[in-house]
Image (cartoon, rainbow, N blue to C red; front, side, top):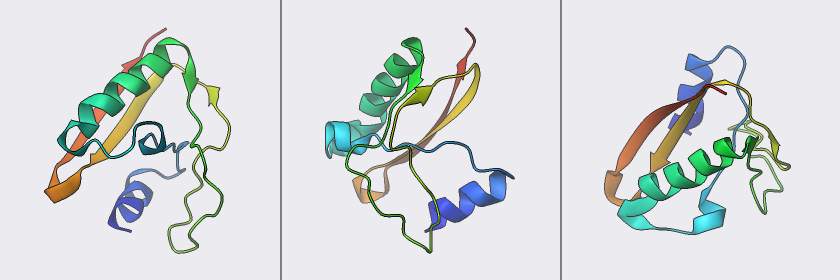
Length: 97
């Protein structure tokens, strides 16, 4: 819930959201680097991956993860990583071409 509220405070219009954990499972302390490699690879191949298995939006969160992949545009991408035991990391990637 806190993450969803934070996104709404930062972005006037919520950007596309995807969840990578379904691709990799729980990788504990390695979640940041694993998801970074996966997302960077997707950007290199010019797409943003869909969220596998997503069906129902929590009405309190009102965030709708991608259910189909979409083309990646040039610009900045925010990656939030939340691991067990409070291991949290935020990265910003830039796609230039």
